[in-house]
Amino acid sequence: MLLLQVIVGGLLLGAIYALFSSGLTLIWGMMNFINFAHGEFVMLGMYVALLTVTYLGGGPVLFSLSAAVTLYGIGIIIYLTLIRHVMKGPMLAQILSTFGLALLLRYAAFWIFSANVVSLPQTTLSGIVDVGGILMPMSQLVAGVVAIVLTVGLHLLLTRTNIGSRLLAVAEDRNAAMLMGIRPDRMQALAWGLAAGSAGIAGALMAISYPFSPSVGETFGLTAFVAVTLGGFGSVPGALYAGLIIGLIQALSAYWLGAIYKDIVVYAMFAALLWLRPQGLMGKAS
Image (cartoon, rainbow, N blue to C red):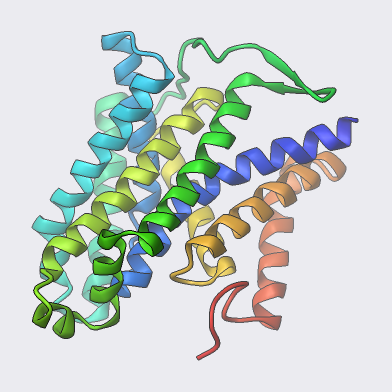
């Protein structure tokens, strides 16, 4: 029963990985743009949740929505003020711009919040719930389920709605989309908002159960890149499957080998899979 509990816990954590990784894969799939600041968006979502609880006394619903809305706005602002300009330059400029943005956001958080590790106070999701004999923290269960629902919702938005069709049209051919009356800048700004918003709400969900500091963005950013590459660049379902796999491998590795080995096992299996299938689980071979 303990092993089953470890497996379920790993999958729930992997669902949150999938949620913030889906935003990164959206940006890559639409713009062929690598955002090295994506992990910092997750970190900012955590601190927005903390500020909401501290100053407004809000519960999980309020601080999750606050993180999503705030990061959505930040994503759009970053696109309008930085990204759309560096996209006209060489790839190196694109890479360095988001790398510099990541450092800016990280050290701004150090300056504002200090380097101390903090955590959210107890919420209405505190406590343990029994699901079919498996004892799980209520906060972890709710966060994982919400993350899966939101990731599937993002996929449906991209594949089943008019907005999704416009986003994909810009991704396929920017000039042809303009001829059809679609404004690429508006769609790409929306994509950045959605990507940052998904990272922000994932951060808020993570903050319910895990302590954090301004440096956590670096770890989450690396996890997102592994999930996106493993699942296949540009594939939201691929990011979902990869996130679940990463969470499961981490949980089982910590259970069988010890917590210090969990990342070693993940990256070793990641390298082995890419050697066998470089395009990822759901990517297409070029």
